[in-house]
Length: 382
Image (cartoon, rainbow, N blue to C red; front, side):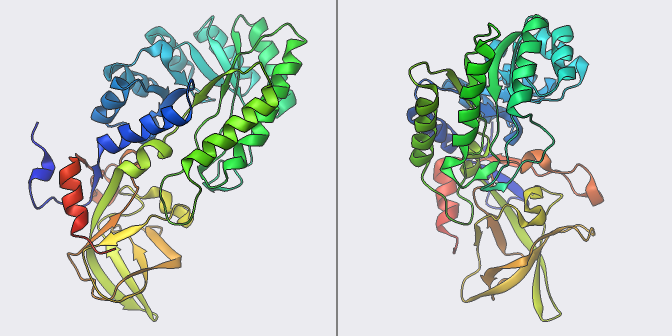
C-alpha cells in the first residue's frame, strides 16, 4: 500500500495517525497494569490497521455494536476475549454478538438483564455503576449506571436468570484529570462483592473503564501516578482476594497517536475580535470541542507574535465554533492556506465526522510513518 504521506501536498482536513505511537502506549499501559486485561475502546478510533497492530501485541477490545465486533474479529481478536460495554442494547445486536462468540456484556437495568438472558443465554454480565465524572473534561451524564443497592439487586437477578454474575463496571469520565477518581467506585465494587456473597454469588471481575488522559491543553498527572492510585485502591479495598481487572482505554491509548491537520480558509475581524475559520470543525472531526470541553494543543505553520482569536469551522451552522468563550492564541501572521494542527487528536475525531453535512466529507485518516511525522512536526512553530 502506498503511504499517502509520501506526497508533499495532502488535501486537508485529515487525521494523521501514528499507529506505532498507539502500540507503544499500549505496551506502557501493560507494564503499568501487569495482569490487567487491557481492552482498547474501539469507538475511539476503529481504523483497521490500528486494530490489527494492537491485536498483534496482545491488546483486547471493548466493543459496543456488532460492527465493532466484526472489526475486532477482522483484526484477529477472539470474540470471547471482548467485552460488550454498551449498557443499553438492541436485542438483535445482543443476539448477533452472542452468535459471533461474545460472552461478556455490561448491563444497568432489570430489562437489560432479561434481554441478555434471552438473547445471549449463559453469558456473563457486569453491572455498571453510576459515577459523577468529577475531575474529567468530558463528564458522563446519568444516561448509564446504577447505585450500589441496585447493582446488588441486578447481580442477584442475573444469577437467577441463568447468567453469570461476573461483577461490576464503571467509567469515571473521559480525560480524567484526577488519579483518585477511581478510589470511590473501586470501594463500591468491593462492597458489592461482599454483599452479593450473602446470596451465594462469587463475582470475580471489575471493569475499571476508561478515563486515562491524553496530552490535551492543561496539566494532568503522569500515567504512573494513575496506576499507583488505582492499584492502591484495589489492594486496600479488596485485601488479599483481588478480583480480575479490565481496563478500557480509548483516548488514553490512541489520543496522543493522532493529529488533525487543517487549513485556514478565512480570517475575519468583527466586533473587535479576530475570527479564524478552518476547513475542520465540529461536524468534520472536532465534535469534542462542543462547549469547549476538550481543548487541544494547537500547532501552526505560521510564525511570529501571537494574539487571541475565535476559532471556527467551515460549515454554515452557527454551532460550528470551536473556541470562543476562551479564545486561543495564534500567530498574528496567520493567513489563508496556513495549517493549524490539533495535537493529541487520535481519539473521537475520525469516528465522529458527519457524512454529508453541508456537503463536507468525513474526516479521512492517513497513516504516518514515524520518520515522516517527525519531519512534518519539525517544520511547525508551536
